[in-house]
Length: 332
Image (cartoon, rainbow, N blue to C red; front, side, top):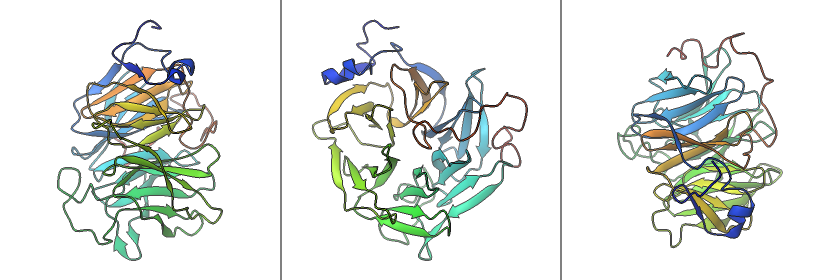
Protein backbone atom coordinates (compact mmCIF):
# COMPACT_ATOMS: atom_id res chain seq x y z
CA UNK A 1 0.00 0.00 0.00
CA UNK A 2 3.01 2.34 -0.26
CA UNK A 3 3.83 2.11 -4.00
CA UNK A 4 2.93 4.46 -6.85
CA UNK A 5 -0.23 6.54 -6.40
CA UNK A 6 -0.97 8.14 -9.78
CA UNK A 7 -4.72 8.23 -9.29
CA UNK A 8 -5.33 9.38 -5.72
CA UNK A 9 -2.43 11.71 -4.89
CA UNK A 10 -1.12 14.69 -6.83
CA UNK A 11 2.12 16.23 -5.57
CA UNK A 12 2.44 19.95 -6.36
CA UNK A 13 5.34 20.67 -3.98
CA UNK A 14 8.07 18.36 -2.68
CA UNK A 15 6.84 19.00 0.88
CA UNK A 16 3.76 16.93 0.11
CA UNK A 17 6.02 13.88 -0.24
CA UNK A 18 8.56 14.64 2.48
CA UNK A 19 5.72 15.35 4.93
CA UNK A 20 4.45 11.78 4.35
CA UNK A 21 1.17 13.06 2.92
CA UNK A 22 1.43 10.38 0.23
CA UNK A 23 2.33 7.55 2.62
CA UNK A 24 -0.61 5.27 3.31
CA UNK A 25 -3.42 3.74 1.31
CA UNK A 26 -2.99 3.74 -2.44
CA UNK A 27 -6.69 4.14 -3.10
CA UNK A 28 -10.00 5.19 -1.66
CA UNK A 29 -12.32 2.94 0.31
CA UNK A 30 -16.02 3.38 -0.38
CA UNK A 31 -17.84 3.03 2.93
CA UNK A 32 -21.33 3.94 1.75
CA UNK A 33 -23.14 5.31 -1.26
CA UNK A 34 -26.74 6.27 -1.96
CA UNK A 35 -26.91 9.77 -0.45
CA UNK A 36 -28.21 12.76 -2.35
CA UNK A 37 -25.68 15.26 -0.96
CA UNK A 38 -23.42 14.04 1.84
CA UNK A 39 -21.81 16.53 4.26
CA UNK A 40 -20.80 17.06 7.86
CA UNK A 41 -18.76 13.96 8.85
CA UNK A 42 -17.71 13.76 12.49
CA UNK A 43 -15.94 10.82 14.12
CA UNK A 44 -17.00 9.70 17.62
CA UNK A 45 -13.87 8.11 19.12
CA UNK A 46 -15.57 6.56 22.13
CA UNK A 47 -17.92 4.57 19.91
CA UNK A 48 -15.73 4.20 16.80
CA UNK A 49 -18.54 5.55 14.70
CA UNK A 50 -18.86 8.29 12.13
CA UNK A 51 -21.96 10.45 11.84
CA UNK A 52 -22.67 12.50 8.74
CA UNK A 53 -25.49 14.43 7.07
CA UNK A 54 -27.50 13.66 3.93
CA UNK A 55 -28.99 17.12 3.50
CA UNK A 56 -31.68 16.75 0.79
CA UNK A 57 -32.91 13.49 2.34
CA UNK A 58 -33.24 15.33 5.68
CA UNK A 59 -31.40 12.70 7.69
CA UNK A 60 -28.21 11.90 9.53
CA UNK A 61 -26.45 8.58 9.01
CA UNK A 62 -23.91 6.66 11.06
CA UNK A 63 -21.22 4.20 10.04
CA UNK A 64 -19.76 1.69 12.49
CA UNK A 65 -16.01 1.19 12.19
CA UNK A 66 -16.05 -2.28 13.74
CA UNK A 67 -18.79 -3.81 11.59
CA UNK A 68 -19.05 -1.48 8.61
CA UNK A 69 -22.79 -1.25 9.16
CA UNK A 70 -24.63 1.94 8.16
CA UNK A 71 -27.92 3.05 9.67
CA UNK A 72 -30.04 6.13 10.18
CA UNK A 73 -28.98 8.18 13.19
CA UNK A 74 -31.77 10.76 12.91
CA UNK A 75 -34.66 11.36 10.52
CA UNK A 76 -36.50 14.66 10.04
CA UNK A 77 -33.28 16.26 11.18
CA UNK A 78 -33.86 19.80 9.89
CA UNK A 79 -31.80 19.36 6.69
CA UNK A 80 -28.57 19.10 8.75
CA UNK A 81 -25.23 20.23 7.39
CA UNK A 82 -22.05 20.52 9.50
CA UNK A 83 -21.43 18.57 12.71
CA UNK A 84 -18.79 18.81 15.40
CA UNK A 85 -18.26 17.93 19.08
CA UNK A 86 -18.16 20.25 22.07
CA UNK A 87 -15.72 19.91 24.95
CA UNK A 88 -18.00 17.37 26.66
CA UNK A 89 -18.33 15.17 23.59
CA UNK A 90 -21.84 16.33 22.74
CA UNK A 91 -22.86 16.60 19.11
CA UNK A 92 -23.24 20.11 17.69
CA UNK A 93 -25.28 20.27 14.48
CA UNK A 94 -26.00 23.06 12.02
CA UNK A 95 -29.58 22.58 10.83
CA UNK A 96 -30.04 24.40 7.53
CA UNK A 97 -33.75 23.72 7.20
CA UNK A 98 -34.60 24.69 10.78
CA UNK A 99 -32.18 27.64 10.55
CA UNK A 100 -30.58 26.89 13.88
CA UNK A 101 -27.62 25.35 15.74
CA UNK A 102 -28.44 22.53 18.14
CA UNK A 103 -26.70 20.33 20.69
CA UNK A 104 -27.54 16.66 21.19
CA UNK A 105 -27.40 15.94 24.92
CA UNK A 106 -26.08 12.67 26.28
CA UNK A 107 -29.66 11.47 26.83
CA UNK A 108 -30.53 12.12 23.17
CA UNK A 109 -32.60 15.27 23.66
CA UNK A 110 -31.93 18.43 21.67
CA UNK A 111 -31.03 21.87 22.97
CA UNK A 112 -31.33 24.87 20.64
CA UNK A 113 -28.18 26.99 20.98
CA UNK A 114 -28.90 29.64 18.36
CA UNK A 115 -31.70 30.41 15.92
CA UNK A 116 -31.72 34.22 15.84
CA UNK A 117 -29.44 37.21 15.83
CA UNK A 118 -30.85 40.48 17.16
CA UNK A 119 -34.35 39.03 16.90
CA UNK A 120 -34.01 37.99 13.24
CA UNK A 121 -33.92 34.39 12.09
CA UNK A 122 -30.58 33.02 10.97
CA UNK A 123 -30.14 32.20 7.29
CA UNK A 124 -29.04 28.54 7.32
CA UNK A 125 -26.17 27.61 9.67
CA UNK A 126 -23.57 25.60 7.80
CA UNK A 127 -20.53 24.63 9.89
CA UNK A 128 -19.35 25.06 13.48
CA UNK A 129 -16.14 25.03 15.51
CA UNK A 130 -15.78 24.89 19.29
CA UNK A 131 -13.06 26.83 21.10
CA UNK A 132 -11.45 25.61 24.33
CA UNK A 133 -13.35 28.25 26.34
CA UNK A 134 -16.60 26.55 25.29
CA UNK A 135 -17.66 29.19 22.79
CA UNK A 136 -19.22 27.91 19.57
CA UNK A 137 -18.47 29.66 16.29
CA UNK A 138 -20.58 29.03 13.21
CA UNK A 139 -21.01 30.18 9.62
CA UNK A 140 -24.40 31.27 8.31
CA UNK A 141 -24.58 31.50 4.50
CA UNK A 142 -27.84 31.48 2.55
CA UNK A 143 -27.47 28.03 0.95
CA UNK A 144 -30.43 26.53 2.82
CA UNK A 145 -32.85 29.38 2.04
CA UNK A 146 -31.83 29.83 -1.61
CA UNK A 147 -34.06 26.93 -2.68
CA UNK A 148 -35.94 23.88 -1.49
CA UNK A 149 -33.28 21.26 -2.23
CA UNK A 150 -31.21 21.72 0.96
CA UNK A 151 -33.78 23.52 3.09
CA UNK A 152 -36.74 25.81 2.53
CA UNK A 153 -36.76 28.76 0.17
CA UNK A 154 -37.16 31.99 2.09
CA UNK A 155 -35.86 35.58 2.14
CA UNK A 156 -33.01 36.41 4.47
CA UNK A 157 -34.14 38.32 7.53
CA UNK A 158 -30.58 39.48 8.18
CA UNK A 159 -29.61 40.45 4.64
CA UNK A 160 -26.02 39.19 4.76
CA UNK A 161 -23.97 36.03 5.22
CA UNK A 162 -21.95 36.13 8.43
CA UNK A 163 -19.92 34.27 11.05
CA UNK A 164 -21.22 34.22 14.63
CA UNK A 165 -20.02 33.32 18.12
CA UNK A 166 -22.18 31.80 20.87
CA UNK A 167 -21.02 32.90 24.32
CA UNK A 168 -20.53 29.85 26.59
CA UNK A 169 -21.75 31.66 29.72
CA UNK A 170 -24.67 33.77 28.48
CA UNK A 171 -25.66 32.09 25.21
CA UNK A 172 -25.48 35.46 23.46
CA UNK A 173 -25.14 35.21 19.68
CA UNK A 174 -22.63 37.77 18.43
CA UNK A 175 -21.68 38.52 14.84
CA UNK A 176 -17.89 38.37 14.48
CA UNK A 177 -17.36 38.57 10.69
CA UNK A 178 -19.44 40.02 7.88
CA UNK A 179 -16.85 40.22 5.08
CA UNK A 180 -17.48 36.89 3.32
CA UNK A 181 -19.75 36.37 0.33
CA UNK A 182 -20.65 32.88 1.54
CA UNK A 183 -18.82 31.75 4.71
CA UNK A 184 -18.70 27.98 4.90
CA UNK A 185 -16.14 25.79 6.69
CA UNK A 186 -14.28 27.11 9.71
CA UNK A 187 -11.49 25.80 11.94
CA UNK A 188 -9.17 27.19 14.61
CA UNK A 189 -5.40 26.99 14.47
CA UNK A 190 -3.76 24.77 17.09
CA UNK A 191 -3.11 27.72 19.42
CA UNK A 192 -6.60 29.14 18.74
CA UNK A 193 -5.10 32.52 17.87
CA UNK A 194 -6.39 32.34 14.31
CA UNK A 195 -9.69 31.31 12.73
CA UNK A 196 -9.72 30.04 9.15
CA UNK A 197 -12.95 30.44 7.17
CA UNK A 198 -13.68 29.27 3.65
CA UNK A 199 -15.60 31.68 1.43
CA UNK A 200 -17.17 29.40 -1.13
CA UNK A 201 -18.51 31.90 -3.65
CA UNK A 202 -15.35 34.00 -3.55
CA UNK A 203 -13.13 30.94 -4.07
CA UNK A 204 -10.82 31.72 -1.17
CA UNK A 205 -9.88 30.80 2.39
CA UNK A 206 -9.67 33.72 4.81
CA UNK A 207 -7.77 33.86 8.10
CA UNK A 208 -8.62 36.08 11.08
CA UNK A 209 -6.75 36.89 14.26
CA UNK A 210 -8.83 35.96 17.33
CA UNK A 211 -8.77 38.65 19.99
CA UNK A 212 -9.01 38.03 23.74
CA UNK A 213 -12.52 39.51 23.88
CA UNK A 214 -13.82 37.04 21.27
CA UNK A 215 -13.80 39.46 18.36
CA UNK A 216 -11.91 39.00 15.10
CA UNK A 217 -9.51 41.10 13.06
CA UNK A 218 -10.49 42.25 9.57
CA UNK A 219 -8.87 39.16 8.15
CA UNK A 220 -6.49 38.29 5.31
CA UNK A 221 -6.59 35.88 2.40
CA UNK A 222 -4.77 32.63 3.22
CA UNK A 223 -5.39 30.83 -0.08
CA UNK A 224 -7.33 31.28 -3.31
CA UNK A 225 -8.58 28.86 -5.93
CA UNK A 226 -6.71 30.90 -8.55
CA UNK A 227 -5.87 28.91 -11.65
CA UNK A 228 -7.59 25.82 -10.26
CA UNK A 229 -10.90 26.77 -11.82
CA UNK A 230 -12.77 23.71 -10.51
CA UNK A 231 -11.95 24.48 -6.88
CA UNK A 232 -14.55 25.89 -4.52
CA UNK A 233 -13.79 25.57 -0.83
CA UNK A 234 -16.07 23.93 1.72
CA UNK A 235 -14.97 22.64 5.13
CA UNK A 236 -11.45 22.75 6.58
CA UNK A 237 -9.33 20.57 8.87
CA UNK A 238 -5.76 20.72 10.22
CA UNK A 239 -3.30 17.89 10.65
CA UNK A 240 -0.93 17.87 13.62
CA UNK A 241 1.93 19.26 11.52
CA UNK A 242 -0.01 22.46 10.86
CA UNK A 243 -1.02 21.71 7.29
CA UNK A 244 -4.51 22.83 6.31
CA UNK A 245 -6.67 20.35 4.39
CA UNK A 246 -9.64 21.74 2.49
CA UNK A 247 -12.60 20.13 0.76
CA UNK A 248 -12.37 21.73 -2.68
CA UNK A 249 -15.51 20.50 -4.44
CA UNK A 250 -14.68 19.43 -8.05
CA UNK A 251 -10.93 19.73 -7.39
CA UNK A 252 -10.86 17.04 -4.69
CA UNK A 253 -9.11 17.68 -1.38
CA UNK A 254 -6.41 20.36 -1.16
CA UNK A 255 -3.47 20.34 1.23
CA UNK A 256 -1.82 23.67 2.16
CA UNK A 257 1.48 24.26 3.91
CA UNK A 258 1.38 26.71 6.81
CA UNK A 259 2.76 29.39 4.47
CA UNK A 260 -0.34 29.12 2.25
CA UNK A 261 1.27 27.10 -0.55
CA UNK A 262 -0.88 24.41 -2.14
CA UNK A 263 1.49 21.43 -1.88
CA UNK A 264 -0.76 18.59 -2.99
CA UNK A 265 -4.22 17.24 -3.43
CA UNK A 266 -6.34 14.09 -3.41
CA UNK A 267 -8.37 13.30 -6.49
CA UNK A 268 -11.91 12.04 -5.92
CA UNK A 269 -14.47 10.60 -8.36
CA UNK A 270 -17.19 12.86 -6.93
CA UNK A 271 -17.51 16.48 -5.80
CA UNK A 272 -15.97 16.76 -2.33
CA UNK A 273 -18.08 18.52 0.28
CA UNK A 274 -16.48 17.77 3.65
CA UNK A 275 -13.61 15.95 5.34
CA UNK A 276 -12.92 14.73 8.89
CA UNK A 277 -10.11 12.92 10.69
CA UNK A 278 -10.89 9.79 12.65
CA UNK A 279 -9.90 6.25 13.47
CA UNK A 280 -7.93 5.02 16.48
CA UNK A 281 -4.86 7.04 15.47
CA UNK A 282 -6.75 9.94 13.84
CA UNK A 283 -4.92 9.18 10.60
CA UNK A 284 -7.98 8.04 8.68
CA UNK A 285 -9.43 10.80 6.52
CA UNK A 286 -13.17 10.49 6.00
CA UNK A 287 -14.52 12.26 2.93
CA UNK A 288 -18.13 13.01 2.04
CA UNK A 289 -18.42 13.52 -1.71
CA UNK A 290 -21.80 14.04 -3.34
CA UNK A 291 -23.52 10.64 -2.96
CA UNK A 292 -20.87 8.74 -1.03
CA UNK A 293 -18.74 8.37 2.09
CA UNK A 294 -15.09 7.52 1.41
CA UNK A 295 -12.02 7.03 3.58
CA UNK A 296 -8.26 6.75 3.19
CA UNK A 297 -5.77 5.76 5.90
CA UNK A 298 -2.85 8.17 5.65
CA UNK A 299 0.68 8.69 6.85
CA UNK A 300 -0.29 11.94 8.59
CA UNK A 301 -2.38 12.47 11.71
CA UNK A 302 -5.25 14.92 12.06
CA UNK A 303 -6.13 17.10 15.01
CA UNK A 304 -9.19 16.32 17.09
CA UNK A 305 -12.23 18.54 16.33
CA UNK A 306 -12.28 19.73 19.94
CA UNK A 307 -8.60 20.63 19.98
CA UNK A 308 -5.17 19.10 19.34
CA UNK A 309 -4.64 16.02 21.48
CA UNK A 310 -7.89 16.56 23.39
CA UNK A 311 -10.30 13.68 23.79
CA UNK A 312 -13.81 14.67 24.85
CA UNK A 313 -14.40 11.55 26.93
CA UNK A 314 -12.35 8.59 28.16
CA UNK A 315 -12.34 5.37 26.22
CA UNK A 316 -15.14 2.98 27.15
CA UNK A 317 -15.96 -0.62 26.47
CA UNK A 318 -18.63 -0.87 23.83
CA UNK A 319 -21.95 -2.13 25.04
CA UNK A 320 -21.67 -0.77 28.59
CA UNK A 321 -24.05 2.13 28.12
CA UNK A 322 -26.32 3.95 25.69
CA UNK A 323 -24.80 5.10 22.44
CA UNK A 324 -24.73 8.80 21.58
CA UNK A 325 -28.14 9.91 20.34
CA UNK A 326 -30.08 6.95 21.66
CA UNK A 327 -33.39 8.21 22.92
CA UNK A 328 -36.22 9.90 21.13
CA UNK A 329 -34.00 10.93 18.18
CA UNK A 330 -31.58 8.02 17.98
CA UNK A 331 -33.54 5.05 16.66
CA UNK A 332 -32.19 3.65 13.42
